[in-house]
Image (cartoon, rainbow, N blue to C red; front, side, top):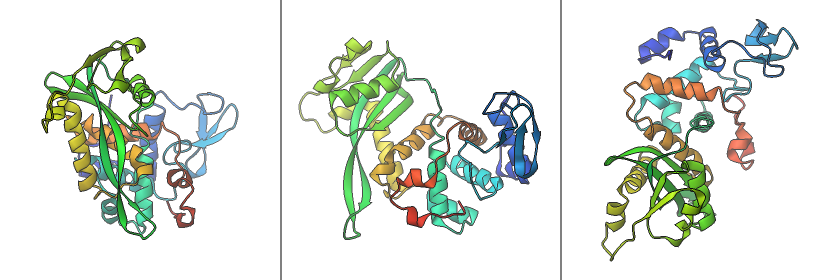
Length: 315
């Protein structure tokens, strides 16, 4: 049974201390009881500082080891409130907003937390799209500092797949690609769409050959130079592209560096695919559930080793 807080007041009452937070993470990480990450034994005793000691191999671990929360120096209560802030807002939250709401002393801490959590927004082993699926590319503008410290506009190519759900949109997938080549587009289709599905594209030659990969392929060739022709013929992916660009410019003020764009695409996908959820608490539950199932993301990994002199040791 899914168990999660329904309101901010419920959140505060349920997680008043670190023990309550650890107990909740225990339920999410080991719903059938503790399993030693080294020998797979199912018995352990509790030690100090939230550690668990396996009764068989004596390996010491904790509920946060090997998760998004590994090596954090901040209270889990603060993490829980950050996750609530992120999931309770329909359009998400920027690092500035998270810093202000939680009273974090460092913008860098808030920014790093958001990037760690974005890595948990992709569920391991998630199902591919199926049925009839529109696929098309769009250019996304992002901001990057140039050599004179002025913001230069860069264009990044993003490919989008959107399930057709009647006249509406089902689930989506997105990815940044270096170019609209056959190898890049075919790889995206194979990674995100179940074989046997019908892939609906425009007449770009790079999409040819999808039938040999086990897909039905419906091609709609754009006729003439009508301004909105593409949006009318592939309306779902163009609607998603419009919402994505609006979200990047609104919530994140367009200040998304190309090297981090993939994780913003993951966040947008996480939110979009759960847009009909009536409970913000359920999104809180889902993100925490995935946060204890993905590998840690150290700060140096997130920044790619280029900004290590800015590391905040209180993260």
